[in-house]
Image (cartoon, rainbow, N blue to C red):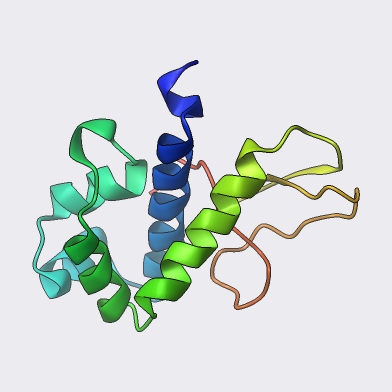
Length: 128
């Protein structure tokens, strides 16, 4: 099994993508959000990229969520849902979007927009 296929790595990728989507939605640079959350910009970059050598701490994610105006539990739940979706075998439509690729089991199109408050998700993207 490739490291990127491990469940915890898939989750970390989804979490990083979720945080990046909300940061860009809020119009914040990495440096600004990192400063507000009391972490370095390079640490935030590693979290957003799911760099396995530097996994996010719970405290980091808590502060990032708070500075983005989000509940920690919502951020983790959305990342968990995205990771679950990403790890399922393809059985429906595949939709690519700005934040990644998503599949819906029933074949219906799936909007890929992590900054919305609905069932949309963000996953596996390396964009800034």
